[in-house]
Image (cartoon, rainbow, N blue to C red; front, side, top):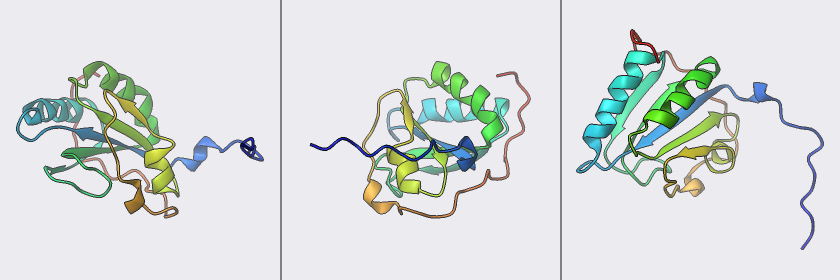
Length: 141
């Protein structure tokens, strides 16, 4: 077995345009927990809360909703999610020019990891800039 090829240089963090958190739930058992978490996020963070998806969408095999956020929100939102995820599984990934790599190689999980279908994701695309927030935070994180 050959040793992996060393990269010529480290990738710059400026490659990350924004982030997504995918919050997974069971529509019959944990949707209420997910709704409470969603409300708490919207009350505390300047983010874009995505639609509820009670069925498979894209690479996600389980019900979920997405939270899109800017780079400068990461340092407060992600630690808060670590402490308040209510036992739900959360995938956090960067948005670069490779959605497949973003979801499968450069992501991390809060809670239990769930299967993803990376084969439906493109290898290269345009990095998604932070979406316009649709929340009005009024409580401290």
